[in-house]
Length: 143
Length: 171
Image 1 (cartoon, rainbow over the protein chains, first blue to last red):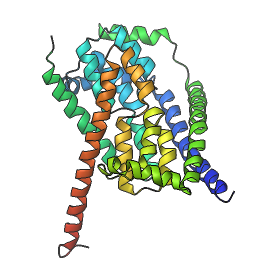
Image 2 (cartoon, rainbow over the protein chains, first blue to last red):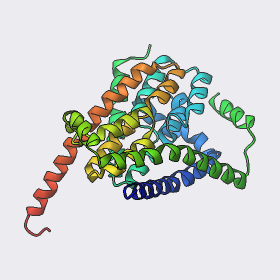
Image 3 (spheres, helix red, strand yellow):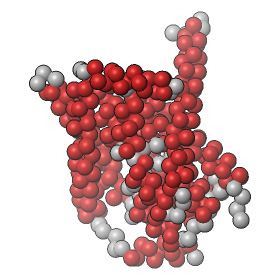
Image 4 (cartoon, helix red, strand yellow):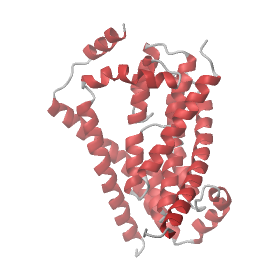
């Protein structure tokens, strides 16, 4: 009993922290998601996408994954990938990028809350994702 | 061509007004939080209680050689199991009671950030037509690579920092 009470208190404290991150984040996303800026962002990021072997068709699923995560952004990722008929090469490159670097806001925030170094986590993931995907794009030449 | 497609997409669903969006966001956020808490509270309590017993120490010793490669204690293996099979919230519920150092928390955040929720996300990745199994394997390999990279960078940083402190005029 002496152990159970602090354990429960700690668990509740952690839950409160998590709620304070998740609820505002999801609400903010709901408010912002319809802004036309996000629809036009494709033009701006096109040169960056080309560097990792992707075309602008991959922009929406890629950025959905980067910011929201694979599980949460699944609906958009799957739908757009099928609608645009992305070729296997691009699907693999996008998958590789997202495997390394996804859901960055939420993932980094929850580890910062418990004492991690945010810039270190984000930096290593982003650099690795760009390097790996860029490398694979050069190994696997477009057909 | 592309522009047409995006407008068509936008017209499919009418855009709700801001108060509706805030309500949707709040309720979705609370629903997600509830789902997460249902898993993380029992895990947190279980790990905290196990910490007082030899069970966690013993299992920790078994995993210590592997975890040690990444500068982590053996007990961190439980966080990895929770993170791989469930999600990062489950992993965090295990990490917090272990009282890790800032480096170790960062290391967990990095490695698990790359590889987590492998069952569900592996499924999602394969529905896009990409090879889900291959990508899941990639994630595990990348997580290890990232872990080694961060460990190297971090010790480099610390060496540089302690060296800088010895310079005259500083500290």
